Each structure stands twice: as structure tokens, then as C-alpha cells.
Length: 324
Image 1 (cartoon, rainbow, N blue to C red):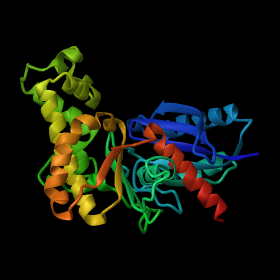
Image 2 (cartoon, rainbow, N blue to C red; image 1 turned 180 degrees about the vertical axis):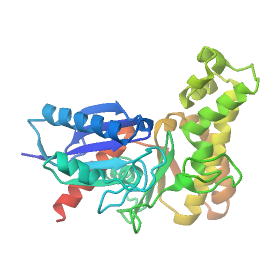
Image 3 (cartoon, helix red, strand yellow; image 1 turned 120 degrees about the vertical axis):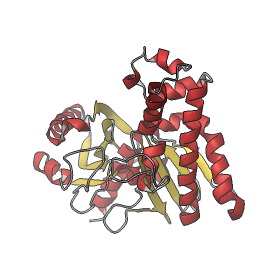
């Protein structure tokens, strides 16, 4: 029988489970809310039940291992996480060890964005192209990044490579969940976009359809609400999106001058608003990198969408199993 990997993507907002074949096709896909604020025990219990359900639905498939993408710095050999900003209670915890104790399968855990980069390289934007270096950036609840260099995923010395969401963009900027100030994540993520909208409307600004869209309940504003308003030419929303795009452009310019990749792929929920962001984003790229490098690095939306980390986790687990 064809070998399959049970793959998991634990993101800041949603956790996705699926069974992936050697061609990168996802079967029996299941999604649950991460709800990381409820603590590790709650999420772990719900995750184990979801995996058990997926295995039950996949009795006709030959599952040979489990791959997991985690939203935060993760040690490759032990699966131990290091202070994941959106998963309180997971510091120094090994999901690898926990899942191997529940299931009679080998478990391989890595950073979700690095695994997404691997998936895009093999099955998405990089498939059929001659790219050697690809950078993947997920812009969602937070901002993460992954690198493929010379066709190989770059995890760093401890598996922590690619945490570009925590590069300093505005040194005296908003506080970030990592403990720093003005990180890219704190000024350009979906969370930051929603926060800026709530702050502006809370200050007394009335002239915005966002207020009506949430029935006056400003705590219901999300980055999607802001994007939808921007598409309707709501000036407050347009300015918020443009501000986030400028900061994202600065972050991408830093990556370009440091790595000179063939292509940058943007994933995560905010990537659905990339068309709104591109004018401001590319102006920053042109000003900060294209002008003196001579040509603009290609920036595109993810081909694989929400399944990138799941497919990447399966790729990583499969290659780890068969390299033994």
C-alpha cells in the first residue's frame, strides 16, 4: 500500500489535521479551533481526539508516521517548544514525546512556517521551477517565516530559523507577545491590523463602515472586517491596510538584502488581502531593495493556502522516516 503521513498544523487560530500521500494530496482533512488561551491541556486533549478520529476515518490508508508543524520555535530532535508566543503553557513541552506515547507511530515536529516553505518549494510555487532559494512568510494571528536554501529547508542550529515576525521594525512600537517592542508581528499581522482598527474607532472616529459591520461591538473587529471595509473604499480601513503593508514591505526588504531569494511566498489569512497591500508593499521594496539590487524579487500569494503547513509537515516526516 502507498505510505501516508498523518499531518498536523497547530496555528495561532486554527489547528488542521489531515492524511497526506506522497504527491502532497490531503485526505480526511479536519479543522479545530486552537484556542491556545485555554491552556496546553485543553488543546492537547482536543488534538488527540481529532487525531484519533482522523485515524478512524483513514483505516483504508497506510499511515506510517506523524508530522507536526508548530507555531513557534521548535527543537527538531526533541520536539520541545521554546516560548511560543501564541501557545501559553507550551514552553519546554515536547509534543513529539506526548504523541508518541499515545500513538504507535514515530512523530516529527518542526516550525510550521519552515515546513510551509518546504511544501511550497516541492508542491506549490516552486514546483516545476528552477528556484534554489524560497522564502515563505505566514501573515495571520502572528507572522512567521521559513527558508529553503539550495533546495533544502533551513532550520537553523536549534530549529529556530525564520522567526522573521520578531525582527525589529519600529523600535518604540507596540508591545509584541514575544516581549519585545515594534516587531514585524506587532505592526503588520492580522492581530495588529484588527488592534489598530479598534484603537482608531475607540478614539471617537465615527466615519467608518467597520463600526456598522460589527454592530458597534468593536471587539468583534478582525483583519477580515478591515479588509472588507477597505475593498469598499472605507478610508480608515484603507489607511490601516496601507500602514501594515508598508511595515511588511520593510520586513521583506530586509529579507531580500540579507538572503537574495528567488521568490517570496506569502501565506496565512492576511494573504487574502495581498492585492490590497501590494501597492504600498512594492513601493517599500522598490525604495529599500530594488533600487540598488537592480530588479524586484518576485512576491506572490501561497499556492497551497491553508494546507501548506500540513503538506510540509508530511514532507518533513516522510523524508525523516526514509532517511533513517
